[in-house]
Image 1: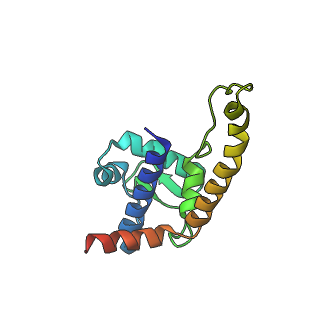
Image 2: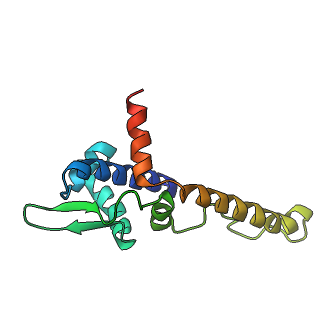
Image 3: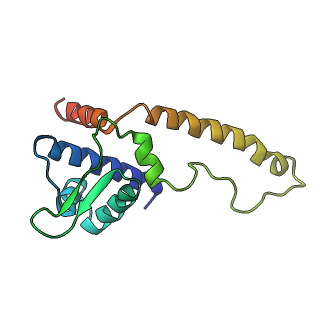
Length: 146
Protein backbone atom coordinates (compact mmCIF):
# COMPACT_ATOMS: atom_id res chain seq x y z
CA UNK A 1 0.00 0.00 0.00
CA UNK A 2 1.25 3.47 -0.84
CA UNK A 3 2.80 5.56 1.91
CA UNK A 4 0.23 8.26 1.35
CA UNK A 5 -2.58 5.72 1.88
CA UNK A 6 -1.02 4.63 5.17
CA UNK A 7 -0.90 8.29 6.19
CA UNK A 8 -4.59 8.74 5.38
CA UNK A 9 -5.45 5.61 7.36
CA UNK A 10 -3.37 6.89 10.29
CA UNK A 11 -5.30 10.18 10.24
CA UNK A 12 -8.61 8.31 10.02
CA UNK A 13 -7.63 6.10 12.96
CA UNK A 14 -6.50 8.98 15.16
CA UNK A 15 -9.65 10.98 14.37
CA UNK A 16 -11.81 7.98 15.23
CA UNK A 17 -9.94 7.39 18.50
CA UNK A 18 -10.28 11.09 19.37
CA UNK A 19 -14.03 10.95 18.74
CA UNK A 20 -14.54 7.72 20.71
CA UNK A 21 -12.48 8.81 23.71
CA UNK A 22 -13.79 12.37 23.87
CA UNK A 23 -16.67 11.47 26.17
CA UNK A 24 -15.29 8.30 27.72
CA UNK A 25 -11.55 8.01 28.36
CA UNK A 26 -11.03 4.35 27.55
CA UNK A 27 -8.90 2.21 25.29
CA UNK A 28 -10.40 1.23 21.93
CA UNK A 29 -9.59 -2.00 20.13
CA UNK A 30 -7.99 -2.25 16.74
CA UNK A 31 -11.03 -4.29 15.64
CA UNK A 32 -13.29 -1.29 16.23
CA UNK A 33 -10.92 1.09 14.47
CA UNK A 34 -10.57 -1.34 11.56
CA UNK A 35 -14.36 -1.48 11.18
CA UNK A 36 -14.44 2.29 10.65
CA UNK A 37 -11.52 2.24 8.21
CA UNK A 38 -12.88 -0.91 6.53
CA UNK A 39 -9.59 -2.78 6.67
CA UNK A 40 -7.98 -5.51 8.73
CA UNK A 41 -7.16 -5.04 12.43
CA UNK A 42 -3.65 -6.37 11.75
CA UNK A 43 -3.02 -3.55 9.27
CA UNK A 44 -4.39 -1.01 11.77
CA UNK A 45 -2.08 -2.37 14.48
CA UNK A 46 0.93 -1.93 12.18
CA UNK A 47 0.06 1.72 11.60
CA UNK A 48 -0.73 2.31 15.27
CA UNK A 49 2.62 0.72 16.11
CA UNK A 50 4.35 3.44 14.10
CA UNK A 51 2.27 6.06 15.87
CA UNK A 52 3.20 4.51 19.22
CA UNK A 53 6.90 4.81 18.40
CA UNK A 54 6.28 8.50 17.72
CA UNK A 55 4.50 8.75 21.10
CA UNK A 56 1.19 9.76 19.56
CA UNK A 57 -0.79 6.77 20.91
CA UNK A 58 -0.44 4.36 23.78
CA UNK A 59 -1.41 0.71 23.85
CA UNK A 60 -2.57 -1.52 26.67
CA UNK A 61 -2.61 -5.31 26.44
CA UNK A 62 -4.69 -7.77 28.44
CA UNK A 63 -7.42 -7.31 30.97
CA UNK A 64 -10.67 -5.52 30.37
CA UNK A 65 -9.04 -2.39 28.98
CA UNK A 66 -7.20 -3.66 25.93
CA UNK A 67 -6.58 -1.34 23.04
CA UNK A 68 -5.34 2.06 22.02
CA UNK A 69 -5.83 5.68 22.96
CA UNK A 70 -4.20 8.98 22.20
CA UNK A 71 -1.04 9.74 24.16
CA UNK A 72 -1.70 13.48 23.89
CA UNK A 73 -4.60 15.85 23.64
CA UNK A 74 -5.90 15.86 20.03
CA UNK A 75 -5.52 19.66 20.06
CA UNK A 76 -1.75 19.18 20.26
CA UNK A 77 -1.25 16.46 17.64
CA UNK A 78 -0.69 18.01 14.22
CA UNK A 79 -1.05 16.37 10.86
CA UNK A 80 2.68 17.00 10.46
CA UNK A 81 3.36 14.92 13.61
CA UNK A 82 1.45 12.06 12.02
CA UNK A 83 3.13 12.55 8.63
CA UNK A 84 6.57 12.36 10.21
CA UNK A 85 5.59 9.21 12.12
CA UNK A 86 4.26 7.40 9.05
CA UNK A 87 6.20 8.68 6.05
CA UNK A 88 9.81 7.55 6.15
CA UNK A 89 10.92 8.74 2.70
CA UNK A 90 10.75 12.10 0.97
CA UNK A 91 7.47 12.74 -0.81
CA UNK A 92 9.26 13.13 -4.16
CA UNK A 93 12.11 10.93 -5.34
CA UNK A 94 14.51 11.39 -8.21
CA UNK A 95 15.40 8.76 -10.79
CA UNK A 96 16.22 5.33 -9.37
CA UNK A 97 19.19 5.14 -11.72
CA UNK A 98 21.20 8.19 -12.81
CA UNK A 99 20.11 9.79 -16.09
CA UNK A 100 22.53 10.07 -18.97
CA UNK A 101 25.10 12.77 -18.03
CA UNK A 102 25.90 13.40 -21.73
CA UNK A 103 22.30 14.45 -22.41
CA UNK A 104 21.42 18.12 -21.77
CA UNK A 105 18.23 17.15 -19.93
CA UNK A 106 19.81 14.14 -18.21
CA UNK A 107 22.62 16.31 -16.89
CA UNK A 108 20.43 19.07 -15.46
CA UNK A 109 17.08 17.50 -14.54
CA UNK A 110 18.00 16.28 -11.06
CA UNK A 111 19.51 19.59 -9.86
CA UNK A 112 16.51 21.43 -11.33
CA UNK A 113 14.01 19.15 -9.60
CA UNK A 114 15.80 19.08 -6.23
CA UNK A 115 14.87 22.68 -5.43
CA UNK A 116 11.31 22.36 -6.70
CA UNK A 117 10.71 19.13 -4.78
CA UNK A 118 12.27 20.49 -1.59
CA UNK A 119 10.23 23.71 -1.68
CA UNK A 120 7.03 21.80 -2.43
CA UNK A 121 7.50 19.40 0.45
CA UNK A 122 8.39 22.27 2.83
CA UNK A 123 5.17 24.10 1.86
CA UNK A 124 3.12 20.96 2.43
CA UNK A 125 4.70 20.39 5.85
CA UNK A 126 4.02 23.99 6.86
CA UNK A 127 0.34 23.48 6.06
CA UNK A 128 0.15 20.14 7.87
CA UNK A 129 1.68 21.76 10.97
CA UNK A 130 -1.29 24.15 11.09
CA UNK A 131 -3.96 21.45 11.40
CA UNK A 132 -4.59 19.32 14.50
CA UNK A 133 -6.39 16.02 14.90
CA UNK A 134 -9.15 17.95 16.74
CA UNK A 135 -9.58 20.28 13.78
CA UNK A 136 -9.62 17.35 11.36
CA UNK A 137 -12.23 15.58 13.49
CA UNK A 138 -14.39 18.71 13.61
CA UNK A 139 -14.15 19.17 9.82
CA UNK A 140 -14.92 15.48 9.28
CA UNK A 141 -18.04 15.66 11.44
CA UNK A 142 -19.10 18.86 9.64
CA UNK A 143 -18.83 17.04 6.31
CA UNK A 144 -21.08 14.21 7.51
CA UNK A 145 -23.83 16.64 8.50
CA UNK A 146 -23.94 18.32 5.06
